[in-house]
Amino acid sequence: MTERTAVEELLRELSPQILGVLVRRYRDFAGAEDAVQEALLAAATQWPAEGLPSDPRGWLIAVAVRRLTDKWRSDEARRRREELGAVREPAAPPEVSEKDDSLSLLFLCCHPALTPGSAIPLTLRAVGGLTTAEIACAFLVPEATMAQRISRAKQRIKSSDVPFRMPAPAEWAERLRSVLHVLYLIFNEGYAPSTGADVARSALSGEAIRLTRALHGGLPDDPEVSGLLALMLLTDARRPARTGPNRELVPLAEQERALWDQALIAEGVALISAALPRGAVGDYQLQAAIAAVHDEAATAEDTDWPQILALYGLLERMTGNPMVALNRAVAAAMVDGPAAGLALLAGMDGRLAGHHRIDAARAHLLEMAGDVNGAIAHFRAAAGRTTSLAERTYLATKAARLGAIGT
Image (cartoon, rainbow, N blue to C red):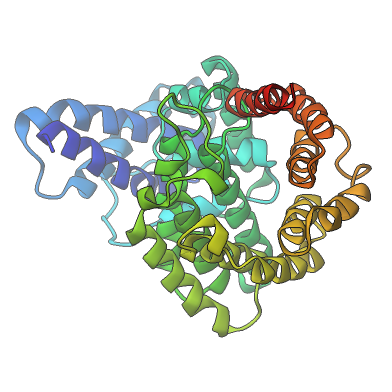
């Protein structure tokens, strides 16, 4: 690792901590973020040439505070706050506390007042340390569009006057649920992008894992936090086998399992094994348990489908999620035959009307049942409805191969 790379990694790690200090002390999210970005830029320029300061965190805080002070002094509106100057304007850099505000910042960015579309980019920007350009690239939108989305999210937080702190006991369940949901969505978008040609965006899923590890470090005894981290690790362990030699999508049943990351699997299994006995079981724990069953099977044929079917049954009763119901139908087909799965899918068209995944699932089950023409029709329908180019190519290729076999 080069010295410059080491500095970049250190800055990414420290970024949310410094932002958290400034937001907690001065309650100006937008101004604090601008000041922190300037401090990070100064460090990225100076540290590789001059060496690390003895206290990198304190150095960044002091520089960011100076930048924030300069901004207030030059702001025309500053004149209207003269009476508050002595209170708000720091006479000297604040005493550097060892408190890590990253978790508080994560909870602030994932406030329930924000939609996932706003909370995800804000979290990636403020806590993940990604640039607006990197986030825009990940979501395939122009940088200006993403900048506006992040700006609106910060304004929403400012207008809501949400205090910068960890949630009070009465708010805990809702706020933690929002944080977990946002991290889950970030991971899914990285592991299986909803749009574009890439099979995966590993930087995005990796950032979700990093943030969830940080959350788990602060809340090691929360079973759903452990469950979400386990789910991410067990799923990400398969990533090396999801892409073929021509960068095509490889489905789970066809993956070369020797390529799976056994260290991640072991860590994920240990996490979910420790979390499940702790009390009430949540949906992230159930999803992690399903992922563990898949990962512990030496071959696709060795998969314990009856256990997976039972777990999906519990998960469907808990969540009522139609995608869970769809996955349960596929598991039922693997246990009781394709007719059983198709019968369950028959009642789901209204709930998933127009979604490519129900066509894809029906196509796979029709192929299992030997209905080649029906499978081709549904593979083509699914290919026409997905916004992921990687999935579209896979589905269209399946239809073409079946067509070649049938002729």
